[in-house]
Length: 234
Image (tube, rainbow, N blue to C red; front, side, top):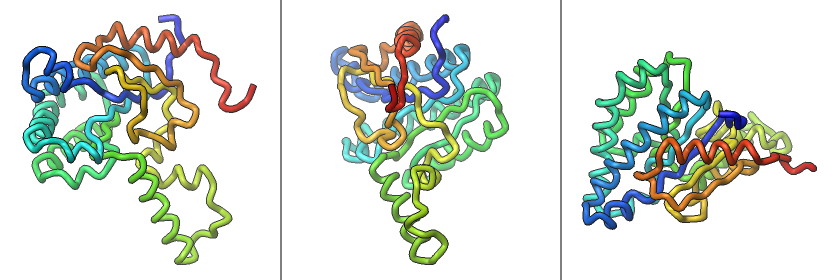
């Protein structure tokens, strides 16, 4: 591929439910198809040389969905860990989790702990799973920590900069995304990486996530490579 490859791609995986509904399937089956699509994009990211891939797997707002749908998503996540861990290690993929995943049930926490622990020494693609993640909650959390530091005298309010705030976010050790992709036909960020996306390139697709193929991904990367990024300058 001749396009410039973004160092960090973030994806809002949208459209699983509508994909299932259009086929007369249960939402669980749509999320299952979405997991399979995610697996292919992880593999393609490694091949392309993307250094960081972040996927919006479960937001803080997703708890509002039906109990059956939430339960199905969580079960699929655990199945994914068990079925894909060996391949992730074979492909040298390092996995971490963005968000307060400890709010989930103990089996989910155990699975995610296993995933991050078993891949922590890998040096290839860094795969970040945003789980129980919400950008507003992330920013509030950072502000609260900084307020505590100011109150205790560890930090002066005048010393708070962009970098200081960034250091308190879930993504403190991750570069800001170069490219954010949202399949599924919606044109919004839905509380995803709001601080970090200040200068990200955005690409929206009508393709529902389960149908989002490596070829669609390649087209998005190619489009990114044609854009001139100015970061507020000229």
